[in-house]
Image (tube, rainbow, N blue to C red; front, side, top):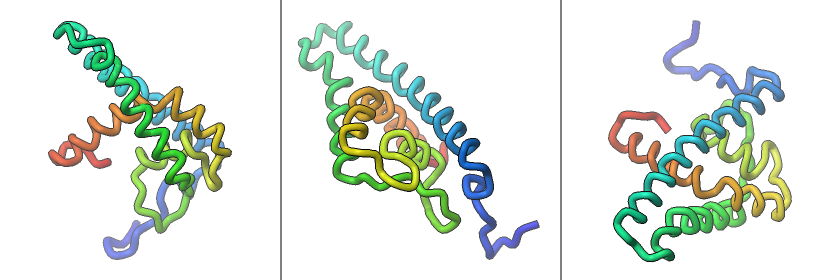
Length: 138
């Protein structure tokens, strides 16, 4: 039984690295699915409004560029420690896009951002909004 004044160790530091990696990838996959659904809905909405092609594709390329810049400018890897303040969502995103314990090479981060960037940005945007409304803990 823990104290309300002393934080206990986080789950991610108590578990085996392979279990942590599997959980991080699973969380990332769920985020990808949610983000992909949101992105496709937005693209379909823009197409229904007869938006020009450049505007219709913006829900894909704009978040992809933002995630690409983020992975290159802030290559901070996911680190499993008891004293970090990263949420599990942030940890899982860093785990897949940047790496765990040490950053992946820039070409691998670029590839990950190009493949996964847009959906993950949409999911984080949704969950960020829900966190601002007090409906989700990011």
